[in-house]
Every structure is written in structure tokens, then in C-alpha cells.
Image (cartoon, rainbow, N blue to C red; front, top):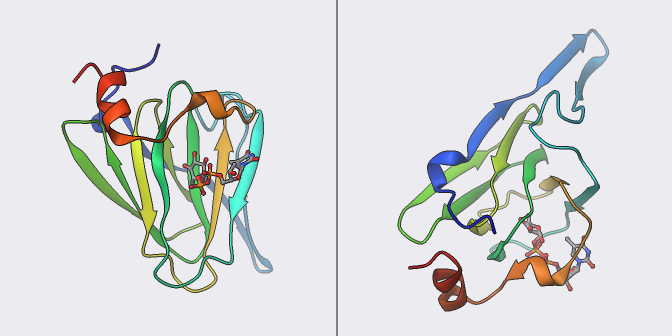
Length: 139
Ligand code: T46
């Protein structure tokens, strides 16, 4: 059970940017550019102004979040400390360890939150109640 990580174990990942006169490409390869193998990719988009997402933690899932377009803020909470990261470049990722309560908000108009995940969708991997989250963290 991955319940021991803290917000300080989550960090920004600078992704490769290949530039030419026609624009940029950013590449993310399994286990090379990020520390896990990708099993799933999904993206959040058309987020109405003022809305926020998240408000849950994952027990085992590792993720990389990227603002593929626009910007948003990710607030992580490990039960004791919290940290906010502003994502606003398609070549900057945020690596999330398992066991992080997250709130994602302050989405700019047209923002796209790209998520690379280490596993398939599994509702049993979610902790959606904050009191249960604190129990999961042994707090
Ligand atoms: C996170 C943020 C950035 C599926 O059926 N399959 C999937 O792979 C996913 C991710 C979701 N769903 C269904 C489950 C729910 O009925 O879509 C609905 C919304 O999912 P969720 O509550 O996970 O949505 P968000 O946007 O609050 O959170 C998601 C990720 O789950 C989460 O890990 O960090 O995006």
C-alpha cells in the first residue's frame, strides 16, 4: 500500500521540446522521460469557468499532469502538508506519487489537462472521502 509519500515526493518534470520553424513537439516515453510505464492517457477539457476537479486521492496510481493547452493550478495534500503547482506550459509535467489528495482549479479558458497514468481505470483505487484519506495515511 503506497500511503507513505509526501507532497515533497511530487515534482515538476521538464519535458523535451523539439523546436523547428514550424513549431514544437514534446515527446514522453515510458520509463525514460517519466519514472513509470504509461497504461492510460486521458484529458480534461471544456471545463466551465470557476469549476474545479479532483477532490480525491489514488491508492496506487502514478500520474503525470501536463497543461497541454492553457493553464491551471494543482494543489496536493498528503494529510499534513499541501503544495500548489501552477502548470502553464505543454513541456512541463507534474509527477504525482500515489496517496496525494488533489484539487485542480483556476482553469484558464480552453485549458486541456493531459494525464498520463501508470494503470487502467479502477474505481477501487480512488479515495473520494477526505476522512477516509486521512485513515489511509494513518493520520
Ligand atoms: C486526476 C484528474 C486530473 C472513467 O470512466 N475512466 C477514466 O479513466 C477516468 C479518469 C474517469 N472515468 C469516469 C469516472 C467518473 O465517473 O469519469 C468520471 C470522472 O472521473 P474522475 O472523478 O476521476 O474525474 P476528475 O477529473 O475529478 O479526476 C481525473 C482523474 O481521475 C484524477 O486522477 O488527477 O483527472
